Amino acid sequence: MSTLHILNKSNSDATTVQSCCNAMGKGDALLLIEDGVYNATGSQNSSIVEKLASGANIYIRVQDIKARGLETQILSGFTPVDDSGWVDLCVAHQPIVSWY
Image (tube, rainbow, N blue to C red):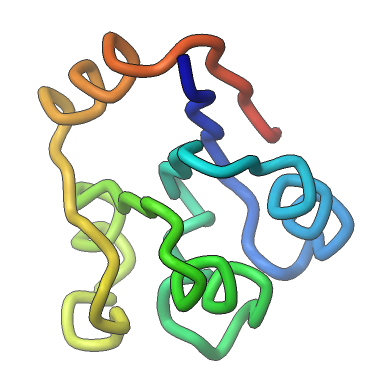
């Protein structure tokens, strides 16, 4: 089964973001939550955008986008999910790795 990586860090913690991207394997998924959603604006971290361009499955939590006022700044290609979608991702992927 593929791994679900959950990242809550923006580029202010570039080491964690880069480590997460490096750990992702083929078929793995990445869920951006909390401040991690800033990585989907393109201005924060090219590692996440590079993963997206390579065909990685990257999801972004809608509630966190709205809480930060980023609705119009998210790059295309990221898949928005709500809390129910987050649960679905956790069911579909094992193990789950949290990058905090």
